[in-house]
Length: 536
Image (cartoon, rainbow, N blue to C red; front, side, top):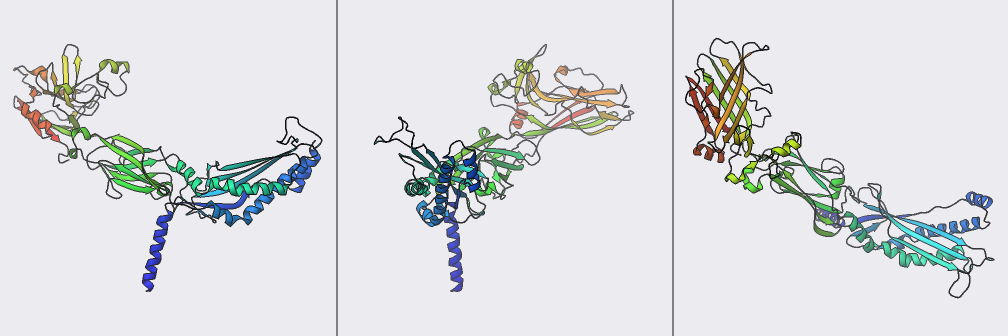
């Protein structure tokens, strides 16, 4: 029986927490925010004021304030009862830093304007025609504060009362008259129903930001392996207590996975955001694993959609989209291009161009045209674009003087198309070979066609020999379209053009390995197009 009682007790606690999590806990301060004066301060007014009645008026204002302050303390429980409770709001006496969402404070002021009885203002009369000699303003403001952010959420719940009289009214009369107004008119303006509407206006969030940053600082890449962090920032969050949240959110991704829970959704509360559950104060930071290009159609591959949705504010459930951000992911199938050169009694060289992109369109109409004029107007700066205004991507074409229209289907990312040297070994008398990596070196590797001709490989490897002095001996191992004639020089460093067949192009479209070889006078050049991470 004892175990059952414990179980029921904890079940009740869990149910209560779930219920309270739908309500804002508001601690009502029993202390009235007012400005009162000491007798010494009032005496100062009496001595220094030109109006003999100034000190008397201040003393009366002070008396009304003190009467109101004392009555608030005496009627504190009645006030809490009148404020009420609903599914969204509950009022408590004590402030608890871990569970209290807001503090409600009462501000009270009174202003008295009394005209000497021997003075009559013809324009200031009551309905019965008597002259006004006393005007009395009283006002109460209910200030709702967020103690966790030290911000004022609202000061709107306000009530002000004005009295006019042909004689002077006492402090007791003013207080008694206003207290009735306070109970029947002012309090209803800040009860549970009124405040729940005001709070909902503040915590139904409509602005935020979502950013994705890979762990290794590279560009977002849809390889099925890259990991990074998705960060959510909401500019203005109020009313969240550490153990008592009044909002719920869902962060979604469409293609990848949140590593935290191995799903495409992360649910969190406003308290999770404001405190330290995810990554630190005032942010949500969730680890994310990128999707894989091969799992999606061509039209869906190059981006990921992140969406922040607000699911609840106070007791009310919603499906409010706060913000969505589409992040571009690299989704290109790339090759490592290996070139192996071997010339007996001379040398052997191996190089590789890494991360080379090769793209053949399904339709020649998909080929962009490089907007040369726009690039020149930009001073050769920024990202090149096509004549369609879109960023330039393979394949694209451009026209060269004396050559004509050239269309490019593949090339390395390297700015100078400089390969990485795998080896360079002498097979003859020259003692040393090395790759020339200078920006003006004759290194190149691209797949192109000229004036609608056959698609071919233009490849060049710039090798230096001998001492690394001012004038080292240079050997350019190359094959390009200018050497299409049959008679090649006997020296085995240049080769006929390597053309690509329809079968080769079909393999590129399927992202398969392609090998091509040419020879000259006993030397050969073998080029291998190796897909990177083909299983992705």
